[in-house]
Image (tube, rainbow, N blue to C red):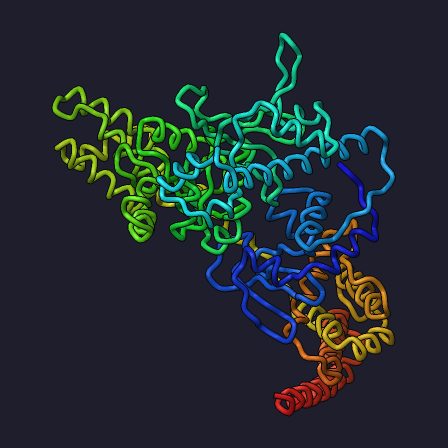
Length: 601
């Protein structure tokens, strides 16, 4: 992994548009002078507790405690390390990264990969031009049109055509300075074992670029156009850049719609995905001809919490759904199934029935557990007692994972109706070996994992609340805040080591220091993120800073009163009088701050 300069990191941070970045995953609304809020992407909630400060480019959730900067947000949502987040943001906002001097072997590997990515991009563009400009590709254009796909959708997915000649890509790439070894490494060429001759791997095929979530071409899926060509579909070979089963077709295009919809549709074929997008179902991705893998489930989990399986309604498609469910069971995903008529696929249905009908089928998706029950019932011989016993036995593992719920009762009724048995008997037989209702764990009523609830945040006492509110107001009012902090005894005024560290950091920041989160202190970094987001909803007000500071002094005096009472020593009366004086001054400052607000509104 390449190491990048600190200057690169700073330039990327400066370039980030935090509203744009977070808004691609969270529906945001303005909630203050410099604050936006929305539903937290890290835990399940119905009332927004997640906020960002777009000026300081920090986020924080007051429900679950997740917080950080733009880099941390990408790390958490995209499942990458810091370097990956830096590269993602640099690519998104057009910032060139400078590499720290690295060992020769690592530098060579990085340079080789960058060369292969450039070669793949050039080749994808060549295939697109050949599809639309060449006479040879006319039958491919007719085939795609016959599947109901229009040119705009095909161009968006950069669909192309590989000519029949054995060396078109080879010759063009050599002309641009690429070697035969690079063509083979990129999966674009092969070598004959007998003669050692290099030739184009893809010929007389429709080409579908396979991209990562950043839209970089990593390889191709290719559909044969001749009846004599085997196999019908041919993928790029695994290599330095492409790894079959790690990615999802169309994820780079579907990522934002999927995030906003909080669900992602999974289809099987390339044309299915394009047809669904053309029908307005822009949150659709494809499996690229593979069984659903752990890596692909990870990609799905980063796109949305709910997955709708719209796989072909044949035996292979149903088996793929079952395999996918086993893989998804280890992830925090809710699975649903889009019912498709037997012998059909999404592209056929969009062409035959239209976009609205396909959208209605998606809306009619059923929980995966219901699909499993109906599949077992459909394949059973229910005319004989042995067949009924067999289906009950097959369904026991399914019902074992369904907690006591309306869904469970509905499915028991379905089984009883189909088997013509008493519901009480069916429930009793299915319950053998079932988990008790109290053991639901992370599973919801449909047997699918749900997003975790917020972790309980430690309750703050009055002093802790006052200290954090004061520091947030200092950030919102930098001139007055710096002056107030500079004349304070931070050790005496703040009640915990964490808020003392935070006060020291805020003072340094207001004095012209870095606005980046502190490194190597995760607890402090989360608190600074929280204070910064909180400050975004506050106005710049000297009176408000004074009021918040006086609140701190009131809390300090209250602590001194408690100590004096416990020790039965000291002038408690004097301290009580001081507290009352401070409270009057505090209330006056707060009143002035409110008047300032009304005067400017």
